[in-house]
Length: 332
Image 1: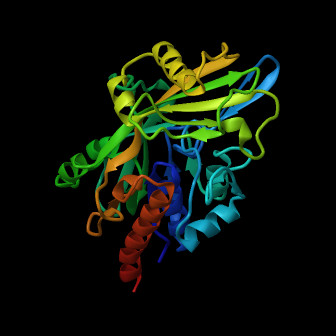
Image 2 (image 1 turned 120 degrees about the vertical axis):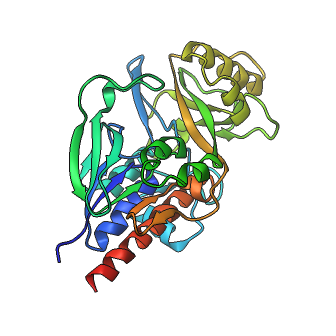
């Protein structure tokens, strides 16, 4: 019997762990992601200012490992200690971790999946150029590409993005996904010509504008020269300012960072902002994954378990194990 062909939609940590585990079991994987590369929130932004290379981990700031399986994976990917006990970061940036995890996988980048069609054993994935898609706006004209058939489909997407794709096939799932709550996060990336009088990382205990801030240039393997900071808005602040523009968010979060320093900050030599609409898990699904063996359809993500990168890894691995079982039964 030929190996199963499985489409995995979403190349963040959950999708990568699912794809790797399924491929290790003999499946033929086709991995789709709307980003230019694998990674999701394991992301690194690069820039240049005043002749200096700049680098910012503007998504996940660090990882921790409670299980030996995840710890072994991070060692395999060259993660290095930084900051507090147990904190690990990718080198030379957080995006190095998913790049290594994606090695050997058949990844189709910059593709926005618009629909899943067909039936179990003959699924078809519809997708189009992600650079033409604008959040909150109608899809651009044109017929999406059609790819398949696939024996099964795994989706490693935020619940709000997964729900419309699975609703025609698993009508009870959107209601379950609606109970999951993820907070947004505005992130400011700023570089300065001189060091700021602040610790390398801070997480204010009180609710306020800043949920987390870090001197990214203090991480191992980062470019020398400029003082690079990542400032992430707290969940409530980011939710209240979700539709603000970067031009509004940047001065607000930098002013809050200046208040932490006890003085006005110097003008940055570079400043940019990124909005993560789906970031911190506030109310998880409460189980490792969703899977329907009859449909050969499944969902995974950190939102299944908890707001930790390791939860995404565990969810993707759990979904792979669940999806592999029907194929093993059928082959027997």
